[in-house]
Each structure stands twice: as C-alpha cells, then as structure tokens.
Image: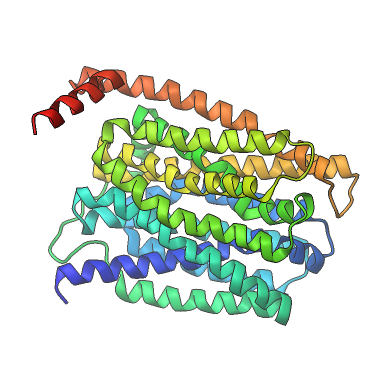
Length: 436
C-alpha cells in the first residue's frame, strides 16, 4: 500500500479506537441512574466514579506524554485501549463499590493514552497545513462513541442488564486493541522519528521547560475554559439534569445529547479551517466559543423554572462548540515547541478541561448531596444552585487566557512576530481586496 493511502488507513483506525474509547469514557455519563441502581447508591456517589476517572485521565497526561515521546503512538494506543477493556470488564462484573473505583481508575488511565497519541500521530503522517483540520476531524468523528454510549450501550444495559451491556462494550474494545497493533505505525516507512535524548535523571528539566513556555500555558488555559463545562455535562450531570431538573423525557434528553455530538461534527472542521487560516487570531476564536458557553449558562440558571426547549438547544449548541474550542489549545505547542516535546506539551494542555471537569463534577455532587440530605432525587432548585459553581470557573479561565496570551505575545514580539490590532488587520484585508 502506498503512503498516500496508508496514512488514511492509519488515521482511520486510530480515530475508530478513539471513538470506542469515548464510548467507554461516556458510559457512566449516560447510565448514571442505572449505575446508582446497580450499586444501590445515589447519583452523587456515582459521580465520584466519574471524578476518579477524569482525575486519573487528567493527572495521567503528563506521564503518558513523557512515555509517548519515548515509545511512540502505536505502543501507547495499544496499551491504553487494553487498559480500558480491563476497566470495563471489571466494572461490569462487580457490584462492590471499591472494585468499581478500581475499574474506573483503569478506564481513566487507559483513556489518558489515546487522544494524546493521535495528536502525535497526525503531524508525522500529514503536512502541517492539514494538522489543525485533522485534529478537529478526530474530535468530530469520535462523537460516534458518545452516540454508541447513548443508543447502544445504555439500551443494552437497560434491556440485558449491567454486566451484559458492559461486557459487550469491552469486547468491542478488544477488537480495537488488535486492530491498532496490527495497522498503526508511528510514521511512514523511511521517516526517522526524533526521540528525547536526555537521561531519565534529567527528564524533569525538559518537562519544566515545557510547563514554563507561555504557549503551553495558553493552550492549557484555552483547553480548560473551553471544555470543562461540556465534559461535566456529558460525562456525568447532563442527562440527570435534563431529566430531573428540566423535566425532559429520556428520549428528549438523549436527543439533546445527540445534538451535542452532531453539532460538534459540523463546528469542528470550521474551527480547524479558521485556526489554520488565521493562526495569529486563534485565541479570539476560542474566546468566542467560551463566552457563548458562559452566557448560555448564565441565562439558563437565572430562570426561576425549567428553561424552554429552544433555550436548552442554544445551551447544548454552545457546549458542543466547546469541544472544537479545546482543540485550538493544541495548536500553540505544535507551532511553538520542538517535536520531541509534543507528547509532554499536549499532555499538559489536554489535562486542562479534564481537571476542570473533575473539580466541577465533584463540586456539583457535593452541593447536591449537602442540599438534599442524602436523598436519591434532586429538585430543580438544588440543581440550579449546584450548577452555578461553573460560573466562577469560567471567569477564572478567562482571566488565565488573557494573562497568558499577553505573555505569549510579548515573547512573539521579541522574536519579531507582531499581532496587529484588529483595526489594522481589517483595514489591510480591505485594501488588499480593493486591489484585486
């Protein structure tokens, strides 16, 4: 097979593996109420499963990125997929809470190896101009995994039982372990891949260098602020909130979840193309997405009662844009750090939204548990108060973006790269069009 065709096969298998990982990752988000019934506990306790999984995912990014730079994406994709299979099998086979926590730890640890490996794989197989679009395409296609969780895994659990549903999901994961190992390669034949040369005892120096770079910091801040609310919504509190607080049927709530996935499939490529065409303005693109999410939540949470369906659709669309918005953060390390540091840098960036989601899910669950006195059902007002904790997190993220962007632009200016004011940029574009 020639390289032109082979790169698409490698990319396709990697993306399918990511979609299956998304199904595993989202399983408790769509089956939170069923999990509470299975383990004989409350939804807020089930939320701690997700907190552990996301915290493991976020904290596992740095070691995963370090190993990725040394071992390559093929090994890490295979290893991560296998860990997620083990976690889902264990979760399906137990009704003991302690073992369920171990299972979600394995899912989170395996998940930490998947997307970061694909981010490393794409620049090795494709020209730079394709990288932002393919990064968005990866996220766009991975939402198939969320749809599988909603329309295949959840009905399977409800129809055939907890163990049968999760075991079937794990078997699909086994297929992907074999496919990844058999098909994916780190780079085209004949291409020499650079690896870090420092000794393990000096590893911390390179990591600290990446952390201190303002491009990494800005990427982290963008990823955090764009994605924490969407992740908290998708992975845990979205369906319970829509069903219990907003009074929607399971079919209507699932339809809104589907809208998140479908809208992301259309928004992602647009964000990718704009990022590639306007690299000096990519932070403004992310800020537009972030402000849309923040303002949508403010309007919904200010209402004294359930929101009209059209407003919930607006909220869901704003959250859907948050996924493509997070991918803008990866473009900073890619264009500003050496290739041998991409794994570590992307690991730091990708931890942003998931650390934010971990904190958000934990805070929401804690507030609901406190306000309800341990009840298994929560009221509209309790959800309204609990979900309001997202507002200060949005504001903190926005401050971080503006501060780190200023630092990065100063560094760019010192290197001779000036970001012109909007008025000058628009004026120049207008003058160029008049001369055509």
